[in-house]
Length: 355
View 1: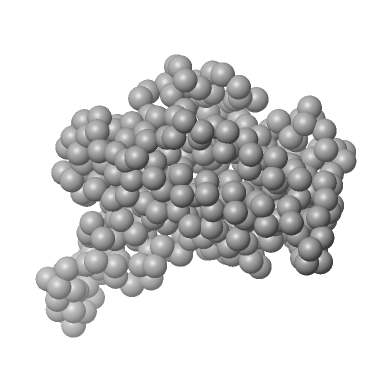
View 2: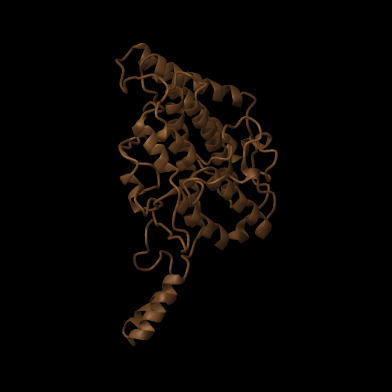
């Protein structure tokens, strides 16, 4: 996890002047003042909060095609790995909705664009900043799309890796790329949401496509304003984090109210525990294989083109929904078609592509 280097971003000019004055004063006074300044939380602005909301939706969206690609590479949908990954994908889609609802409550509508899957880069997360460094355990890893294999499963574990150290104020990363884990990212976001809680407005472009799957849980929308709305938004962050990496432990039970009541599988397991369980299995199910760049005009290339087009259409639908347009009648059909497109790529010997 990244430790603070110098003054937190957003510190006022007065605070910096105080620090400068004390730097030439008595050593004891200097130490006390520096300690006080370091203890001050970063000062958030609405533009910085909006930047983090966009970063959150980028990160949540990135996981969905990555996990779906691994999911549909598994030939037998009745196997444990298939069902564990499928349940996680459903929750990632919920998380994208929750981020949108929180952001809209603060006056920002996030936008979605096709993610990139290159090298080892995962949006806004730098695994090397976490302590202990999880890349020493979960290796090899890659952001490149591929089938169920050790590389992909290690990457999925890294994405959902628990945040171990939670006793300090999280740093505010200037460019939203300097967080060691999803947990630290959302910890920082919580600070910004708290500081700007007066901006929360209820019933602003809220959507709820997943409420029927969480009958024991709280509302999945922000309906109140001010402090009451902030507490609702904070609960939505808790759902995202608890379902994802489980916050601070490798084995941690998701609270009952945040568990799927309809079509889940191992509902008490956060994503990290699901993926680490797969990683430790002695035998994995049979998978499809494919090439990234099939010959032009081949069935595999044509399947990739269909997936790219349908995924672009799906993002258009989501952008309309996240900006208050509501879900179209064919929303479920479009989602199902994407699954068929991904499977078709694998069956025709091509690694799925989304852009």
